Amino acid sequence: MPTPYSQADHRALHEALRAVIADGATPGGVILTGAADGSRTVLAAGAVAPEHGPERPDEHTLYDLASLTKVVATWPLIGRAVEMGLLDIDTPLREALPAMSDSTPSAEPTVRQILTHTSGMRATTRLDHYRGAELPLYELMCREPLDDEPGRAHRYINRGFVLLGLALTHVHGRDLDQLARELFDDLGMPATTYGPLARSSRVAPTESRFPGAPQLWGTAHDDNAALLGGVAGHAGIFASAHDLATYAERLLGAYANADDPLGAWFRAGLVPQAEIEPGLHRGLAWVTTHGGHTAYHHGFTGTSLYLAPAAGRYLVITTNAIHNGPARTRLAPLRALDSRCSPLDERGPGGWARGPCASATGCIRQPGKRANRSGSG
Image (cartoon, rainbow, N blue to C red; front, side, top):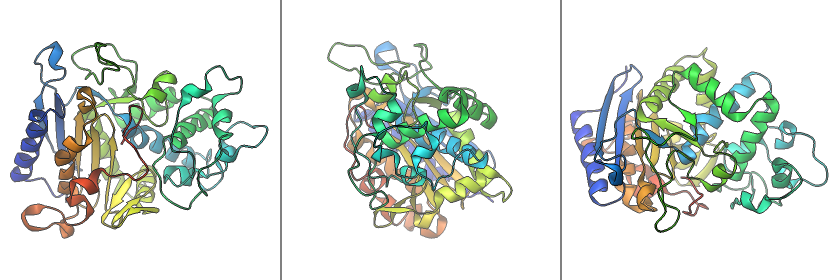
């Protein structure tokens, strides 16, 4: 049976959300807690966009997920491709891309190494540097030299997931946004989509690019995703807390079903593959703690998804914190409450977790990742 969140948990979560809003970390946001049995509690505060009125966000407000795209779209699509025999995660990436001429060192890491952020690829990604080039983007990126030996160490890198998005398009012979649409429809997530979206009060704006400019609204905040038309493997998805809860429930249900291919892929994703820091590991795309019993991922814009499969519960955070400028430090008290998702046998006095995610720093640190306008957490 799922272990539900308590009233005290919900009070603490709601207070933390109100506190980060009062501190100016975000205009508003939504926290949704739930369990595998479908029970949900929605906590909301603040405004969708203060400059456009006081309307409060709710579980149906759409937020730019930024790097949460990696585990909401790309990771499950890779799992589907593996199940269909279109991909083998232990073969070099070049096997999933069209034939390329000349040397392509960045095509040598395996799909597994890209998913675990151990590819050794360059950490910086500037697709604008390829403007005007005659070669296709995947070949330009694959010709880049590696920074490190694949598999040697963990370093959070976006470019690998950009290439995974291009690989998915190639092996399926279909556009990435079409593949994602089919996935989300199958999962019961009708509102989840790549942009652009029409400006409205149901879509949370993100950041103003320069003084006096309006906030980005319904278009991808990530620079590289925007250059790809808003459709990329590392960022670009918009979703509501409601749809993320549906996704979490689907994953938790599949986890407990030995015959569900998604469950098998999720269980594989929870196996620690590379150490980030003591007690904190990278699985297949997911960050894992407590020996792989808890998984989470963040988005640079101010979104998070936490899953505790053994406890049968999850926690969703959707905010547009980037609206007010980089706010990782000020969001830390809210993200630290991912400890509410930890396994019961790891919980300390008062329900708080012991271990790396009991602290704000442990919850948001990703070595090798610098906060920047095109980055995602």
